[in-house]
Length: 265
Image 1 (tube, rainbow, N blue to C red):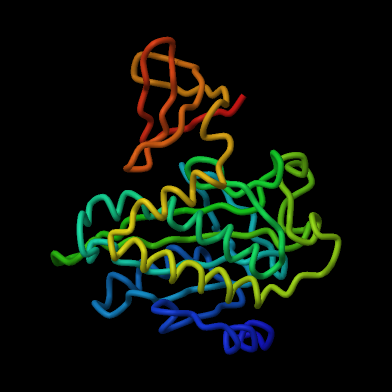
Image 2 (cartoon, rainbow, N blue to C red; image 1 turned 120 degrees about the vertical axis):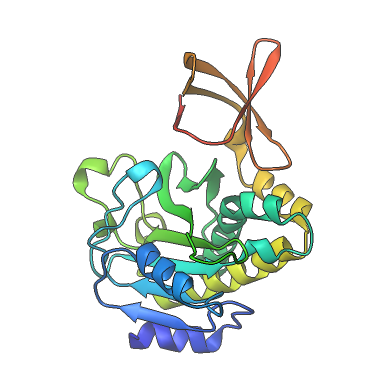
């Protein structure tokens, strides 16, 4: 483990997660590595995989996540929301929103920078993307509690994204105008994720949803477009429901969007 990461992790109380932390100089995908570990062992919950570089990093719906060395944080955590004390299916559904809340809180604690959330999985500064989340279920050979790998990438330096996406992306160092202790960002995001995961497992869903809504101004009153089975549709966002679906108003009716590509206009 790099010294800067080890020193920061030793200073921060990480909670129930990060019982095992595996760091790689280069890896294909931290999500893939974490999924392999989850499939191999029943005690894998809380395992963290991080890397200095990903050669096959990805976001939702197969999008590429540019992951050059020394420029960002690329992290995946094994979770078992199926062990929630109540409504385990709902807990599993809310994993991505839970992770978003944790990341904005962890980043703010580590750097003082306040980021916004965009449904379902992005962290923004203004209209520029600072970080993204990818939650993927793990296929297990034997019936076990629902297992999800939550991966996240945070842009630390400007080189975390290629020049052709500079209008759509930003980084912590760009926004703050100073070097960032990436070890502290890693430690604080893991600590926040652990705390919010405790909320999820304990069934404190309203605490997660209320925190998400308070950091997601675009979830209400923004124009969006998406493709439905009947063709392209557009409307105005009207918040999220108690299972994290995006609500969109079309005339006198509400549409409930649970997945798919949404374009924010």
